[in-house]
Image 1 (cartoon, rainbow, N blue to C red):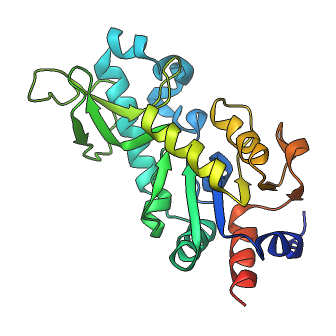
Image 2 (cartoon, rainbow, N blue to C red):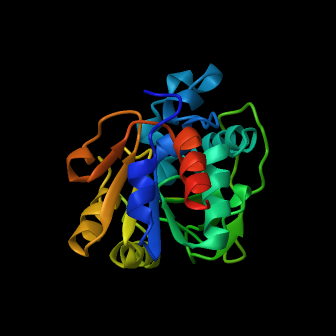
Length: 249
């Protein structure tokens, strides 16, 4: 992978584009040091399987355990900063019709200055009541415990993490907006997503069927690489600033 990727094919594709849609995945935040599921499993959490904590069944069985684990994740995410790729997208959107859709739950796009981000997998920080659905903000507390009672809602329900758990459907309104953004794109950028988590991984196919040019920015081959006309083997923090700078010339 080159330290200075050749972004000219991407810039050429963007030259006539009126609307650009960007789908970001875990690779977008990797250079910020955002912990993966497995990264959180250190210390007292090493004995837990993260795949079994991120489920409705786990919440029903032991909400204090699940809430403590997500508090730990929130603290770890809050400790990192948006990278140059996040900042480049935010700056680009101030001057052009650039629409961001993310699979990430870390809110780093917003912290970098993006103001209109569609979260198809929810957010660590936008919680809701498990009974009435009322929105709640999460207080970030760095704790060293595997049992912490979740807050109670005014209705008597419990405040749960606002993320999409395994076995749950995506937020209907968010995915409808993500689909609309895919259909509206002249150029669709895939940034740091592996292309294995559906239905979000179907968005580039929707964009391509609507006539968009599909561009992949990823240091690795993915399940979606064959669907992309342009493949840039670089990372978000390297490629996106270079692209945005070139487009602005």
